Image (cartoon, rainbow, N blue to C red; front, side, top):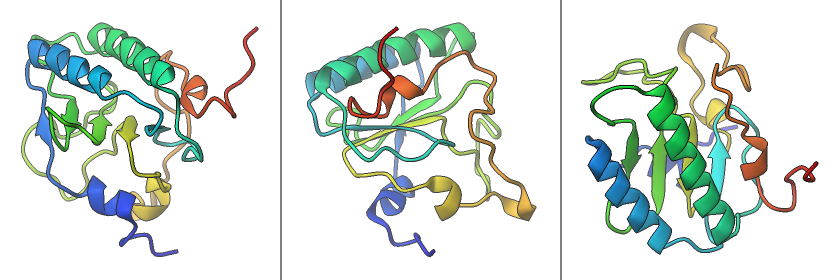
Length: 162
């Protein structure tokens, strides 16, 4: 299946700006919270793309939890692992997994996929649209983080609370 012209893939390949410093990430999260509504998808790359958007409350909860995870697992003096199409009015956000950064500076023909994507565009499966080179496979849930992706699929498919 050719997904090269899918709107989600086209946006994925667009221009992004980084939150280089932790203070910039704080300001960015504030901007994202300000535009939080029920039109956002939360996509844990490596899992099946979500079919439904999440509520504003779920998006804000995700932001809080992912921020905690990034600060815990990316213990650097800089951030530089969260990228957005627009830092002031975001509609597409790539969040890289601190345990799978690959090339952190410069350019690569095969950069690692982000760990999570927040988007107003319905996601397609990036592992299908952009398969890894040389026959390598992406293994779902293979990241060594303790973060659970399941609650951020959608409210319809989220597991029931214990």
